[in-house]
Image 1 (cartoon, helix red, strand yellow):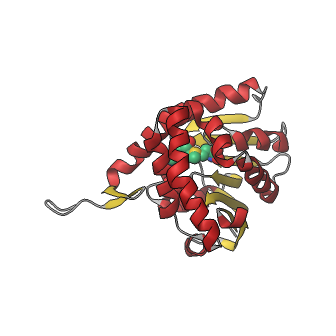
Image 2 (tube, helix red, strand yellow):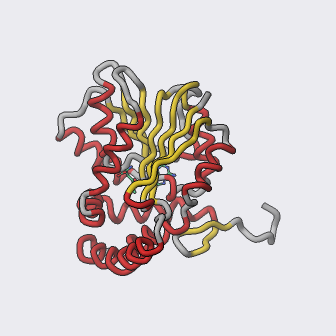
Length: 252
Ligand code: SAM
């Protein structure tokens, strides 16, 4: 960057901030909510996030012996399910940038007796520290919208996927119907921050959640991003009227 030139900016929810601060600010959100993250997911989604995640696992076509990356895996919901599917000959890597989320994930999975085929790594999705062509499948669930440079992260995912491997992105998206959008806006901007305040004493982080969802690319834009970066056979599946979408693409 030249002296006196303006710093590069990005969004943090509805705020525009210097790009270099976003990763740290997102980290602070997840340090703050980590302990109550799972409870809040159940409360905010009325438990429906479990169905979205089950559908994602089904579409991942995970089989015994495969190597899977649960990226931005947080407290390990998906890793728990995936570890059963890959069995003793396979492996699941739970990767996340945030050590508070990772610690809770590791303790939780150990309490479930999941120890043999899972590894944990603290890393930024933008610079994945794995050899090219390592994974049969990468799943990133509710993580992509928090990443500062999404193209860089998607490129990094492409590199570490095996040829023939698939990427699944589960993320909040754009509701398909106007009336659903209105109800959803009311719910996420007024009710969710209140629940956040009561349960975690932190309305701000949950306001960020609602805002970051609105700033995330819609279904078609994300599909085009994946195609531009070289993914093939990209398709998406809307769930709950488009509140959430699952994108899937392949490296050929
Ligand atoms: N995947 C889990 C799930 O579906 O419940 C957790 C999702 S949580 C909403 C988002 C996660 O993304 C957090 O654990 C956060 O630390 C992680 N994250 C945010 N930015 C990241 C980055 N640049 N690299 C890796 N993980 C990141």
